[in-house]
Length: 164
Image 1 (cartoon, rainbow, N blue to C red):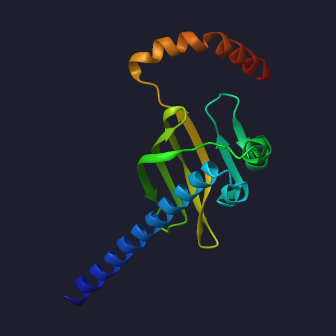
Image 2: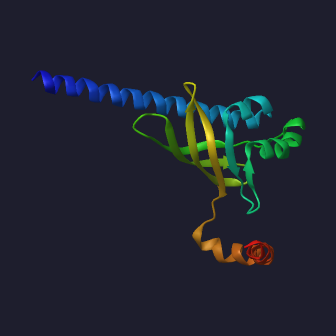
Image 3: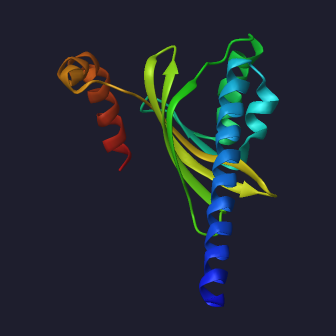
């Protein structure tokens, strides 16, 4: 009976710890999005790891943190970066609570987008290590969208294939 009680205590401790991590992750992601909405450059980038990657909606946007900072600075300096609000979010935490991954649906100026990424715990704080932003396209509009972007995609594909 003691073993069962001890096991229950350990399991409940792990569940509560994971829920606490999820709460901290939600707070981190909400603060990160809010910092962009408030054009708070320092707060935004402090919530990212030093080796973070941001992948934007354009096929050319695969930014290392420092490159993303340089690209973003003029938007933040104008007092208007971007404004994303999560309307749905799923969070998963690894067993030692050092990494988490998530996906979220966002209300944005581009209408519904999807964000997904990875957070790392750094010195006891969750930070965004990798983020992918995608514009959500209803399946019945995909053909129309493909036709719209065909010319630019063909040029980019040609350029990328020449790099191989």
